[in-house]
Each structure stands twice: as C-alpha cells, then as structure tokens.
Image (cartoon, rainbow, N blue to C red; front, side, top):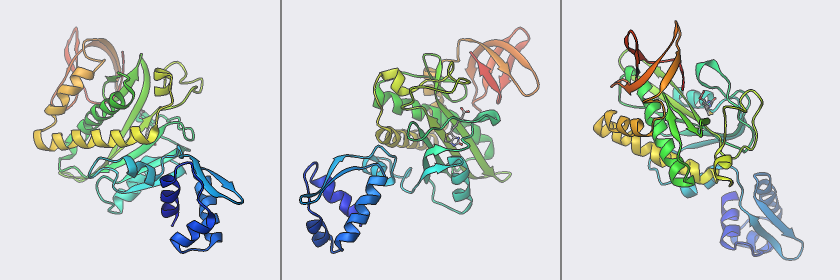
Length: 318
Ligand code: BTN
C-alpha cells in the first residue's frame, strides 16, 4: 500500500492529490492513507499536506531505501534482495547471519549508520547516519578458499569504476583494496568468509564509501576524505550504490568466465601502490621496499635489498 501511495505521489510530481482520491483509487480508508503518509515522511520523503487539496510530494527521500535502490538497479543478481536498517551494529555481521541462514547470492545489507562498523585489521569504521554508503553483499563463489582474498582486489576495481562513472572522480587503489583520492581514503573494503577445506560457503564483501561527509573525527581527519569534498557536490548515494552493484557484478562475472587475471590487469592500471617505495607492517616484522607487482594470488611483490618479498596480508603505507 505504501509503495502504491508513493507511486501515485511520484506520478503526480509536485501536484496535490486529495486524500479522498487516494483512498478511492487504492480502496483504503482515509485514515489508512494518512498513516502511510506519516510513515513515508518518517522515511525522509518531503510530503506537503494541505487540509483541502490533499498531499503533494515535494522532495524525494535521500535514504537508501530498497524501493529507491531498486528503481536504479541494472544488476541482475546483486541487490535483488535488500535488507535495510536505519541503524545496525555492522552490515557485515547482518550479512553473515543471512548468509549462514541460506539467503540467495547477491543479497545486500545496507544501513544509514553503523554503531560498531568494522574495518580491516580489527579497526573501527566511522559510519555516521545518512552520510555514506555502508553496505555488504553476499557472494557464493565457485572458487576454493585460497581465492577469497582475490575477491577484495576484484571488488576494489568494481567500486573504483562505479565512482569514476557516477562522480567523475579519478581515485587510485592502494593495495589491497583501499580507494584513495588525493592520498586520502574514500572507500574501505572488508571481506569475510565461511569455508570448508576445499569450498567457500559464502563471502561477505563489506564496503564503506565516504560519500557526503564534510568532516571527520580527529583520529582520521588527516587520512580520510569524501566524494562530496572531492567534487564540491552532494553525491546521490542511491545512484552510486546501484552503479557499484552493476560494476561489481560485471567484474564478478568476468572473473568467473576468464579468471582473476582479467581483472588484475585493471587493478594494476588503477593501482597507486605499484612503482612506489612502501613500508609494510606485517604480522611478524616491518620492512620497506619497492612495490613492483601483484602475483596470481593477489599478493603484493616488494623488491628489497634481500630479494623479492611476498605480502599477502598486513598494512602497507605509501
Ligand atoms: C577498512 O578497514 O578499510 C575496511 C572498512 C570496511 C567498512 C565497511 S562499512 C560496511 C561494512 N560493515 C562493516 O562493519 N564494515 C564494512
């Protein structure tokens, strides 16, 4: 009913429809119409109510509501099932629960804010209400567990392309999957999986996109930025999310058809790590060297005085 009322309001864009007409067309009471209108307003739709003229939609919501996302979706699998939360602990946690309970591949969890958003290496992730895109997608790839780490490089290529297409901002990928603009982080990706010895049950790819923040907490103020700061304009989160899902689906399909190398070529081109002196904070030791390439596993190859080191996990600063 809510969707039907919204469709009629959108169809009449800016013009009033009387409560009587809505109730007559949809065969519900005027009180029911009023309750749905109140719920729509709570969801961020700006609806003007006039005692004699009825209701008019003045401004669409800027929330990441499933119906709004679906109106822009071009992907066939990703985002067909959407779980929306005004607030959640972490979209990755929700997605993992859904995945363990057998949700279809491509299911996404999206939130306006996260109370305990999680980053790589047990860090937190700043996720204020309505400012970014905090979402996770469930994949069930037909690969072995060894291939899961490569999914994060694949995801970085997809999101970087979508950002470029929608906003025109040219970001770079810092190994393995941070998206940076002007040396500051715009996107972080956290990939988690459940697997048996020889098969993946599911992979959850969680993305945090700093879309419209204007300021950051002091701890990250020097290292983070947003697409709004990069472009000087507010970014439509709904359009960007739909494009990210489309591009992610493209790279995921390509990987399944032609292998990871087909996407690694794009990763190399968009990388801001390769060709640079980097410092690695590994689990066991720290060292510096020249980042020369990634190998077939997505590991970063670093030339040092001792030879070429392979880094599969850890923190790399450029
Ligand atoms: C990083 O450390 O760079 C990765 C950050 C990943 C943040 C995203 S926001 C949506 C999803 N849910 C989480 O708790 N984390 C990821």
